[in-house]
Image 1 (cartoon, rainbow, N blue to C red):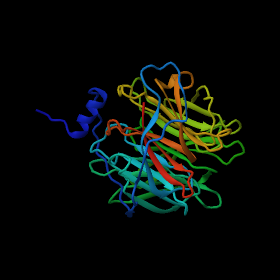
Image 2: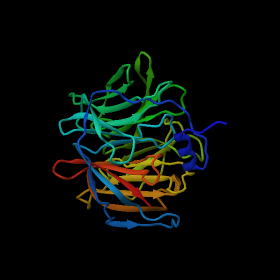
Image 3: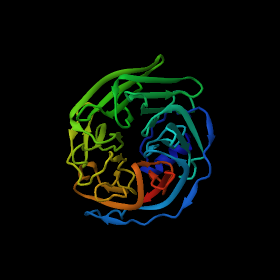
Image 4: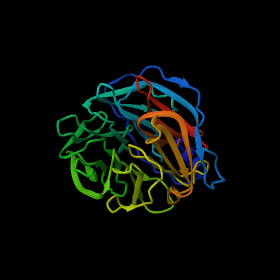
Length: 379
């Protein structure tokens, strides 16, 4: 009789027996140094909440918080394992730009208190990096890809892909520049290993751009690029693959409008042709962090968004909202303003394998040292 391994049993429990994708994953190698002691903090109570007609869930609130010993000059990037992968882990990756301008990341295989070590790269930026984890082919460790805007005079874009025990590939896009940080995601509909890089350009209107970057045995190869001249961004964009299973492949693209700073977003089936959705009433200086989850995970709503306030909110509080589907995101959602304040924008994630601690939000605090914070959320 065939027996399920741990991650298959966990996935079956979480989504009621949906088939899981069995792929090998690889841990990123590199120079690892101690990350220090993680401070535990009492969960904070929401400052304000607003609710639509969603009787199935309560209001978003913090359940636990960790203040990390690391400091950042911008908000962090957060990758989480929201879909099955075998073998399991690392479950979470937190990436940031230190106050010295160097790029860093931490991996974790448990809850928010398991970020125990970090990798510091020789690369520098003046804003946060973007990060995604890959899957291995016949190995047991997961490669990690990062993207960032360089500190060179032109602020050119860079992509790095590290294969543990093998080599590190780097691509500098000498023809493309940005004034802020990029976003990074996988092109899931391709049989090749293809990354999607999104950024706001240095043109007068700060138009959004998306480029494919292919991973080949010879290195990273620049692919097709599209510029969306009607999408004008005040800060870094957000590009993610929606993980809901109710329809075809779907991507979300989010940004802060250059003129109004209202949060705007669009959806696409192929990450090429985009359909703009109704704008959110909320505003921010940076893009919203978006998350689309499998609807079969019935204990949490499938659509989530996090952002830092602006305008009258001079303290830049962390906000989160959820909706029962992306189509209801702007019309029927529940929103909470947390008593946390952030430098840059927060990042929201979902860890499939930690039942009761899946929903995460990470941000850079406004304390004097600008420490990184990670909290669990519940409804």
